[in-house]
Image 1 (cartoon, rainbow, N blue to C red):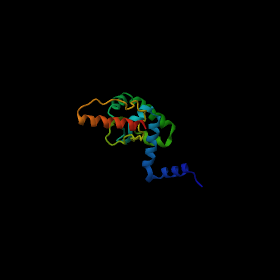
Image 2 (image 1 turned 30 degrees about the vertical axis):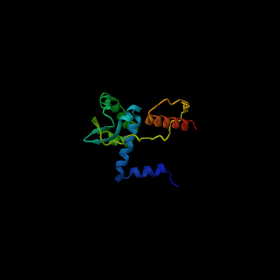
Image 3 (image 1 turned 90 degrees about the vertical axis):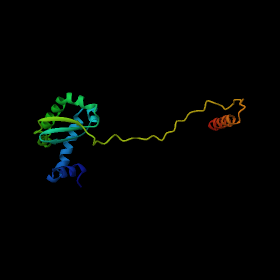
Image 4 (image 1 turned 180 degrees about the vertical axis):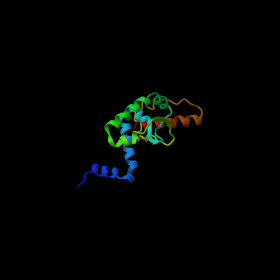
Length: 150
């Protein structure tokens, strides 16, 4: 029985799954970047010998434009070390970054926790009010405080 890794390598070697191979090479490049840049870049693609990186937030654009040399150095390392990815990255002459509106935002994790705290008020206070409407409101507040104590 073949292992999953062997099956994936066979599938990647087929010419009609060329995009999967490119995607794995882009992931290798992404994982070589520092963690702050990994969060910044949503995806890569190559067009006309230019490597494009779609950014997830506009604040990263200037920082990555200043660090293009780092990305170029990482590309050279991938070309030297990985023969399969070298076919994809050898023709890259230029690197451009742009702000993408087509990125997947980080998943929102909703917390179900309700803040639990001990009621500090005891509900023991005198109601010296002559107005009946205000007296009803204060009595309602007093009952709520007593219910929270339980």
